[in-house]
Length: 194
Image (spheres, rainbow, N blue to C red):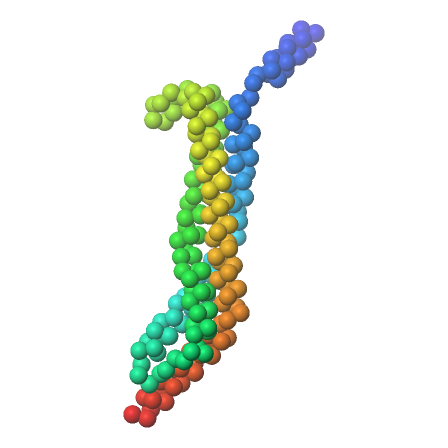
């Protein structure tokens, strides 16, 4: 009987302990950061980089063909070249964006997990030797939650760029390739005639 009474008293005491008000928002931010990390991992970077490299090679072809005296680009070529530049611009920093998102999502997860461990353990001194107070926890929780919000914004922007770059490429690559092939043909005929 005493054991049951002791168990009930312990349950009531544990149930009455105030939970840190930052714990739930941090757990939600942690879940959000992990979701962003999974979304980043789902990017098909091999395809994005392959398209980016193909577009860069096409831009280089346009550059060297543009300086050849025998090759002339006309006004009607401008929209096609514009679409090449547009698609390329959307994907130009794709590897750096991907690497940055990967690092930042891991950093957010690590920082939030560390702060949750501090809250759960009741630690009073951090790794730098600073005293951990409720104000310390509030400031760091706010900072980490904001970091996850920023991570989401950068992810959304990156996804937008990647999607637009790939869509622009899909819609315009046949015209771009056809133009470059035609101009290379003009150049090759001029070399053969010399």
